[in-house]
Length: 274
Image 1 (cartoon, one colour):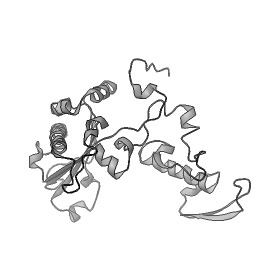
Image 2: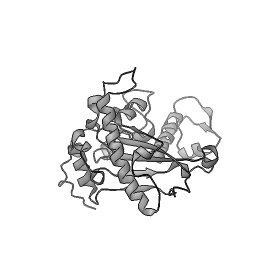
Image 3: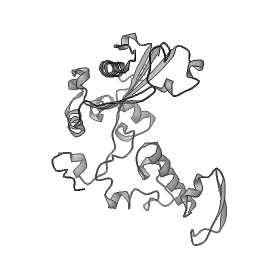
């Protein structure tokens, strides 16, 4: 398929460097009531502002934080992922009676939040009043949009966060702190076209690091994003460290195998992988 990408003026795509990937916001909401009473769905929701995802991404990148704070809920430029963890746990109602949890994940550019990066106050455990106000304003906008859409399926979510029992939002600064991720990237390196060029994907994004003998790359940066991508990256990293040809052997619960001199320069040894 011949894709013409010239119409998209994305500097991040056409320069010669690999970049940190996307970052975003995580809204956590706790509600009083049971999942059945509130008719909480058992499925996930993806809410998109428009069918043209490239256009909405461009709009989001071009906005400042102050401009984003002025948007109406239906104008939010990023997709919204909505999940209901309480529906995934069969023992939830027994362990957490009369409680419902909702999680919302959405995209947000790093440049909205970088002004607060060095403003954290240990005493107040906050990045400042402006930061907290921005979080609260965006939380309300996102929740209003989520409630509007999800309630169309018969759910009974409160339309305002003031009626929620609990809510809190994590920002790209949260990811940067807890994941030690550059730019708050929760999916590591960006999955742009540059990343998947053969010279990068096949020759550089590998477990072994030639410049530093004994150092290995693992997780999503060695493969691709997400749980399966990170797991696969760990699998091929273990394969390289152990010097075996068949990584599928590592998927067994317990396996013993012998590494030959042809596979590795080290003396023959028996390894056990658990």
